[in-house]
Length: 260
Length: 260
Image 1 (tube, chains in turn yellow, orange):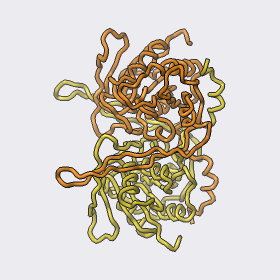
Image 2 (image 1 turned 120 degrees about the vertical axis):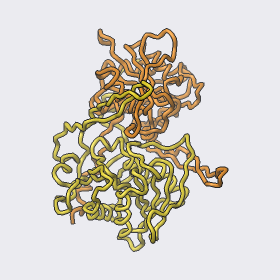
Image 3 (image 1 turned 135 degrees about the horizontal axis):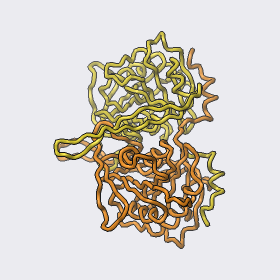
Image 4 (image 1 turned 90 degrees about the vertical axis):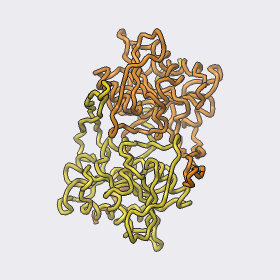
């Protein structure tokens, strides 16, 4: 640990009052100086949305009494929170950005839809080491206590080792007691997808509408995947990049007759 | 070209009446059977958002007279449009999904924020070959005519060659006359970012609010990047993947003392 305490920006996508971010703040206060800038309402499944057509509000808020750190609630998305925190509140880059702890998994393909991870990725784009944490429990009464030891260990490692440019961490925690969790496992993103199901209904005016639901399909049996780790009692850590180039396909593409 | 016409799903993020999707539909009608499922209102900068807390509407709509293909407007995001088209309208996977032509660039890091590309990525996740097209011109009166030849060539190649699992294409077109465009270039995503600027104002009730704006910073001088191609008069084609794992960093991460 550096002599000077790191400045840690805490955000999430479930909103500033969610139990998950409260647990994350508690852990981070043991590791550095904390500032919280988080959405004023839940933003789940927002992907990497940013707010360009609406004005953004960002106001100081007191969620708990007798806390020393400052908290701000923002009317925007998780990515907006990171942008406004850096630019308008801190006027500097924090030393670390952590997002979560999300109520619900962001493993495998869920990283794409995740507001929690969009905050971490936004921080990464700005050159800030960043981690997104998610617990495999959607419940508002989820127990975040077993997470804390692992969240602390991973965060300490990031503070100590840093992260290379262009990489952030996606951490998912199984819904288990601390004693049941086998440890932390570095993984790759499992190849999985959601098989959509739409629940079609008719509103009182006679117009059809749909609710999106779906079934998570994991066809990837690899034991080096986040899904395997979580199913087998491990905390999964996937290094995530935002250079989306499929470098392996460039050579093949160059053989296409694009300019004929 | 296969004897049987391919079924092409057309969507976008600027909304179903935008001139860009109209131009894309015209090109696709020369290449296959077209179905349009697009947002009923602009969804720019939505990232990979999906709608889980609101009901979705999806209704047939006639945007132009005397067209043979069917069009539907959806109250959701571009990713929602792909999901609902496949599941509730087509009841099968289309042979191809094209998104755009976006009014504005989705090159380099913009792929992360892009609703246009989120539709293509969503299709890719579902195993549908997909392409996102964007023109570097935000104007509603942008001229899409010069795009058509290149859009057609790239789409024909995808129909002919297919795309490997896990890869979709991000195509950006420079704002130039057709005669000025030098050709199509396969590229990697340039390493670039937005340097945020917030325009702080006070509303009539005395509360501060912000407008997000920013300056695009490209520090990547590589001549194999999409930014270079576009700046030098080429159409850029970047193969995009949604396995976000930073595979190159896994070995290093495994040397960390995560379980101590």
